[in-house]
Length: 308
Image (cartoon, rainbow, N blue to C red; front, side, top):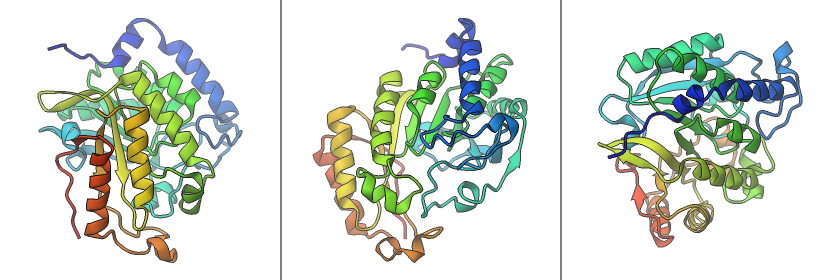
């Protein structure tokens, strides 16, 4: 069985971090880190849609045992929750973190130290949650940590609303991409997020993620490299689910590891929108699962539960 070293180790050994960091910092100066393209100078403290300057804002970090089965393994996924968000879904279950930016600002060095601490705790990976607006900081923190002994896979856990420019910088750094694929149509996405082009961006982004790392590879029950796609089934949106599954099967891979999520609740501002101000029905979830199977997808997360 092939041993998988994290991709960032080869990038470090080949001396490629310096150029990536230079280009990443240029993105911050006239911010184009994510598709919002706010054009503010985050290096001087100006704030755009994500409400984050040059230093990352972190809500929490800990070994997480509630993630997908191949990420959790036996020792947990080393999860770091970033505050702020470029998408701002109005139904976000982490509303206080994403919309209200609850967290504490840290240096990039401290960010890297958290990764090392999670490795010492025994975590199987580093799982950076909602990182689309802090790609330069992630790259710098990974370099810092890798130079000091980090040797576990890096998971990029995003909404799918990711810049192609940033994703290209992450090529050779990220081991496991775990995007949400929330909506298939831009007009539907615009109703429930802060952007007009989510679907168009996500389709391109997820294809690029797969190009970089391929289908998910699992060794001894633990993921080491590849793409894992999450899809949250929403009330009354089965057509979105069906189209997403067909897109994945036809344009990415029928071997895509997918988590069809049933955890939707009307969090945040969702109770103000009649069409999504309720919980998901059992029948809707099972219809979504069947749609995924009909599309030819067959690698489902084993730990998905449907609880009310």
